[in-house]
Amino acid sequence: MTTLSDLLREKLAGHGRLVGGEGGAGATVSWVVTARTRTPSLDPLQGGEVVLVPPTALSYLGGEERLASLLPGFREAGASAVCVWTEPDEEARSSADRVGLPLISITDTSVAQVERELLDHIAGQMRHGLRQQQDRQTHLLDTLAANRGLDAIIRVLADHVSRRVAYFPAEGYPLTSADAPPSLPADFASRVPEGPEVATIGVKGAGDALWVTPVLHRGARLGALVVSGVPSAPTAAEALSMRQVAAAISVEQGRADAAVEAEQRQRDGFYKDLFAGRSLDTVYGRARTLGVTIPPEGIVVVVAAREPNGSLPEVAKDRLHALLNRQAVYPLLDQGRTLLMLVPTMLRGDSATNLLLRSLAPVAGGTAVGISEPVQDAQRVSEAVEEANTALLVSRRTRDGAPTRFLETGAYGLLAPLRETSIARRVMGQLLQPVITYDRQHNASLTETLETYIACNGNASITAHRLSLHRNSLSYRLKRIEDLTGLSLAESENRLLLTLALRLQKLVQTDQSPVP
Image (cartoon, rainbow, N blue to C red; front, side, top):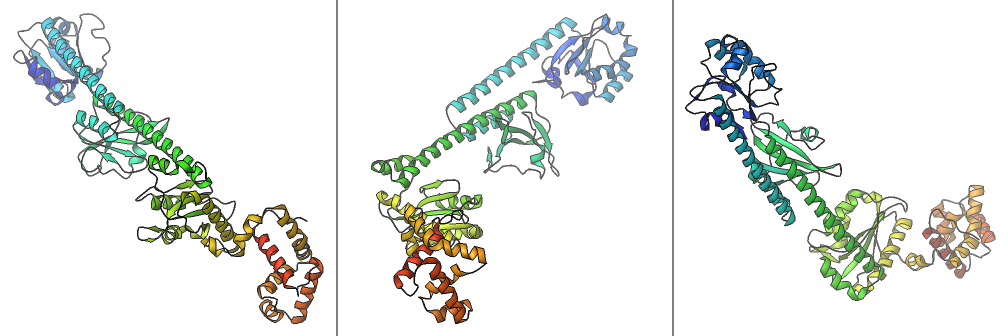
């Protein structure tokens, strides 16, 4: 990048003098053009050109007396400065000051020599800038190829612009080339460009601004790259570096995300084998390779939505992931509707069960938890999974989702494996279907009466009291149940059979009913 001040100092010193428009002396110079003695005297300017006006061209344009009126037109066309081979009058100097266009008086040097020297200098600076740009690009590509990470990529830009650089990912903590990331305005997110351009954002209450460009990957915004403490908009080279570094961050983050996804797929495959009891001869070797800790004594915990067809809240998943991965990586398999995990019985000096329940406390009303008995061998993990799933089933069907250990399931735990067998469903259909059908048709409560009578160990007085019934009304209901089931309730064997049928009924899917 070449400025007019550079040209005055290095190429025009001694034979060029700035006589007006000093306020524009810091402008960037893009090229040099010479006015002609024909129409049009200049081709359309692209912006930033130094315009040389030889005496013959000035005469063609109206002479020295018209110079003051010509300067606003040059400024509007995009010129960065005007050089003349005369001593401009006071009116021309005032005009240059007014429009902020540097006016330079040249003496003792030909137009051709000035043009040649200025073009050589500008071209040299361009070549130098291109070499620097190529070097930076090579450095950036080398950094990417060497897998040095996002920090090293950010430092490439920081070295170029000599400013503090920070990357603000959409999720997670910012990365910065300095000790701390810059403070962002409240409306920062809405001011980040949608496409890969660089925007300059003013910071309220501060004299400096921010350069901002999005980091995009397949059309989605991964975050924003920010350069802070800048006084003005970036140069073309600085903006190009920002875009290149943003693209490099996208590649690096995409690569890192792909590596994490690949590692998670490997872990998920390992967890599936572990929980299903497959490939047990390689369990500990695979665990070491994947950085997974298998506790010497652990419990299998399954967490799911309270309703069988419900979805487990994402906040519950996030809290459990954070809890289990804080110090070590324990087996945790996300099955969509459920989370299955193997954790130590003691975690950070406290019962793992207590820690898990405290983590789930904010969403406890929408979850159900099943817990196995302790297991000391990876060979028995699949059995512990069965225990945890059984405890989850009992938790959902009989305990309103309350956390349930396998040993707390009682008879339900023994009956759970039978619940979907054809024999169990046939027995339930033969014994309970007539009672359920009678209740539905007559708006009666025989099923509730039977459950209460069995819970009271066949004591009619206690049953009548609990149901707030007269003894005669209870006797009528019990007689009707005996007629429908074909079993005498006076026989303990029959009451046991009906107890098992009622408990199996609670364990079957809610959208299934017993069939004959």
